[in-house]
Structure formats: structure tokens, C-alpha cells
Length: 177
Ligand code: SF4
Image (tube, rainbow, N blue to C red):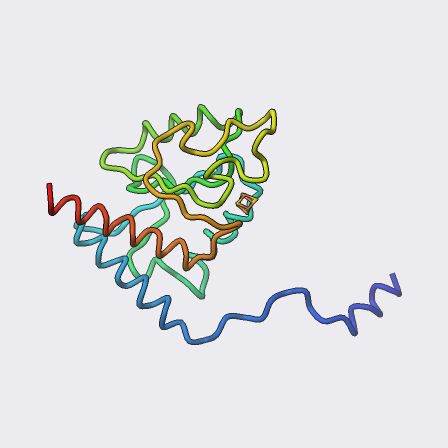
């Protein structure tokens, strides 16, 4: 115990440096995203997050979107508790056999039009869990996927860029159809 206390006095913290206080890039990206959602949907974008078997690394980055630094709710992006209120399902992790039915039922419970975003490398093809007896595979093995955001885990900015690309694609499709 004494050794631990002594080490903690001199050891540098394990945490990474805090992000730069200049969050202009976040503000710009999230503002465009919120505006595009209102143009496409007439209201805020509602997101339901589903952990289909992740290690929780992707969840930590998704949760960061709601922390005091990113605070995306101020731009009109909301995380909702029910798939019945969602426009987007953000799914993380490889889909485990235990979560397969829950994921299917959540997808069916989400009203159309809906989009599915597979977040992280595991959500694409099982990632480092591929081949496990407990894993079905990537999200597209179970439900249709509209967008994949790669990374292990992807950073919050990558998720915002992905959501914007998704809405812009939907916006263009609506105009041309
Ligand atoms: S992509 Fe990486 S962080 Fe995300 S669930 Fe898989 S191993 Fe975890």
C-alpha cells in the first residue's frame, strides 16, 4: 500500500490530454447535421443506441456525444429510450447469439423511414470477435445496414460525420425521387 501511494505521488496520469477548448469544428459539424435533420424530417433527429454485444468501447465514444464537451442535444440530436421514437438505430459490437432476437425486434419496432448505422469495426464483420461461438457476425447479418462507421472505436467526430453523410444521402434521394 505504501508503495502504491508513493508511486501515485510521482507517476504521471494515464489519461490523455484534454481536447482543445476550440470546439469550432464540433459546433460547425453538429449545426449542419441538426439543420439537415430539420430539413429532412421537419424536427430533431432521434437516435436509439443498441449494444448488440460490444466491449463497450464504442459506447464510451457514443456517450461522449452527450457529454459537456460535445453536448449534441444543443444542436437538435436526441438519444431516445425507445425504438418507437427513433429515426436512427446506432448499433455497436458484433451481434451475439443472445442479442440477435432483441436486435431484430428492435428493428421491427422502429417506425419507417428508419436508418441503421453500424458503429465500429465489430459491427461491420465481428471484428476481433469474429469466429467466436457466441457471435453471429456483423450487424448486416441480422438487419439491413445503411451506413457503417469504421474504427475501434470510432471517435465522436467520425460519428457526427457519418450521420451527416447519411442524412445528406437521404436528402438527395428524396429530392430525386
Ligand atoms: S469496435 Fe473496438 S471498441 Fe467497438 S466493440 Fe469492437 S472491440 Fe470494442
